Image 1 (cartoon, one colour):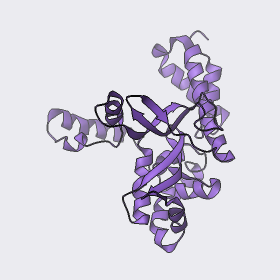
Image 2 (spheres, helix red, strand yellow):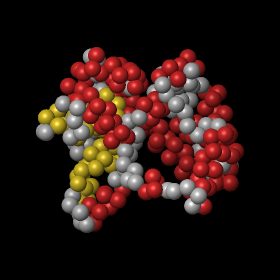
Image 3 (spheres, helix red, strand yellow):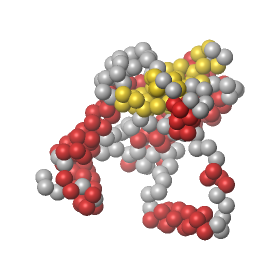
Length: 263
């Protein structure tokens, strides 16, 4: 995921340099900064000190969710504000006007928006409008990872999702974790880090459990496991909502989920 890279401009804005390399770890799309290197020195403490000063005020106002999570749990989350908010029950609520109190925006949520986006894509497909902006690098690293594995380019460090196998001591070995890895013709070697704080570990472990429950549900066709996985999601706020989401999803996708129809 490119979420860690999205965070680098925020660090750069406050520290006044683009020459930064962030060490962040977690699970897919939910990672936390452990260090931020500039010329071999960890400058993450400098960022965390400055964000609460007058110099950091404008950035702090843009990163309300990140600041709240850092203040509560002691690690800085890496990613867009909207993405981070998905994993916590505090930000996208009626009390926050669906996240507006945190300057969060929703996307692709109305028929009008979907229609507009479809019309836009039709102009690209027809040649009516240029697609040059679509041909720029996305920020993701799939091509570079493949090239490093094949030896086409020198080995590089990239963020990957790999089995934990002790890379993060206090997460299950079978968990899929997201962290930096050395990638070359010899394979993918994840970077081992120190144990994470207890609260962060619990947050991530819940995501691991949710992923495993939903995978087991998909393989077995067990709707109870699917419901349990849904209920571990931070955006499912009641048993009733979880059941309604599950039933609606199974009904809408019945043709593609035949194993659920016999349960």
